Image 1 (spheres, chains in turn cyan, green):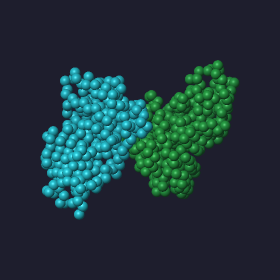
Image 2 (cartoon, one colour):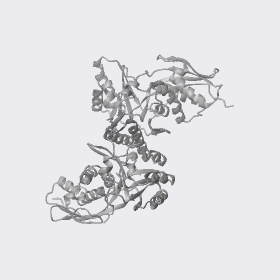
Image 3 (tube, chains in turn cyan, red):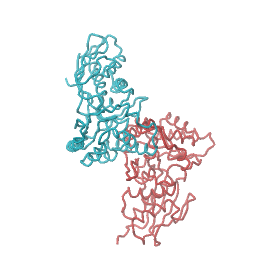
Image 4 (cartoon, one colour):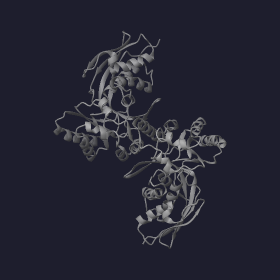
Length: 313
Length: 313
């Protein structure tokens, strides 16, 4: 019988930006901060248990908890019915923020547990398990947050059937600025206002931009990345849910950001920049735009994380 | 006053494949063969003149001829009213074949003339002039054939306003097989049967594939290129115009091709392959599929041309 080499692990599980402009539903990226801290421990009671949740009001019942459901899917495939694991979560990513809070819980649970299982599962399998957490959180087992949370960097979900995820090249000097306005936008609402059909000419413009964005990443051509960060399909509809969205877009670009859009289904808004100075300038602009609005907000400045979930002890 | 260093030039202008699978309307590539041969000469009569056309029944009146119109647009911007040029065309790409016959005429005229003008115009300007030829040929000034014809390799048209064309990386061992069934498919008919609206979920799948195809080209990952060569939007509609299309797709892949689709608006069908042997195997399969049909056809096997229009004397 195989023995785990360690009985507990602490991990950092990163926030993620999905729906990267033209890459709606396919391109996501991982941040260096913020992120959740999680501890996974082997325990005597078989099955999955949530020992503690700090920082957010989330269910302790494993099958109602995103992290629990994801880990449950993993242990089921592992097949050792006597194995038990418990999870403690220190939630630093606010649920409902649009920067992959549920994905971080799901990804951290399975990637952490996989360390205890000596890397038994591939990254793609971990994505598959974490997607079950997303299914609980939003009703759809999407991969565009859990993939970058687990694999790090910038990822592209080419296909779900079969699952086919590509880790794109991350230019070394690409930074992200995120503003999280403290308002509620439900993922389900954000999805409902989308139209089921789109104009072919808009779709063509969108896939021209997606191709150009991917080329820009590989060429490390920041000007091309900037020109490609355009979403003619989803942003015009969803941005009405986000206060001062047009101002953020316009003024952050003026201040030197490459461009950006809605993070996930909002309300967070992200901007990409070349270098930390431009990313901090974008943060200043976001603050200037939001300070007069009377809406609370948090702002994050981060490099793109190249590692995804990582062990911290 | 500036003087041209040479008074005549012969060029080879390549056939091109546009609408590369998922990259409908945005991704095109240049072939090493077939291609047109053209001669452009400075002459005493101001303006543009078609001296001769061999191999196809095309108008000799400059403003009704694709090459003439493109060159006219270029000379107009050049601004020397006394300058005259004449064009002789040896047409080796059959008009209506779907491998960029009109684009080759337009591209060859302006790229050839630009040699006589000592490279006065940029490649992007040449594309812009050649697009005027396309406007005459099909009613739409599209760039997805003239861009690869002029720039070589694999190109992506990100945007028309402003014109933004990206030359993608071409993996060194990427080959193309083309079958041209000798049937008529009018570009205007092929365009009319397309729907103006498409399902958002199909559009998302398409741009996932476009992103993955571009990543595959940069990574020289032939398996990824193969998985990405899928068109869920246009091919299901247009392929009904092409005899035995499904057979070609299926059997060429079985024989080792990476995948392919309709070239331009048809009737030609292209397959990409890794290496010449696989490209020739695809040609054999195309022959086996088409021989019993009683439809005449031509088959071409070619590397992707990295040069575009090139001087041959």
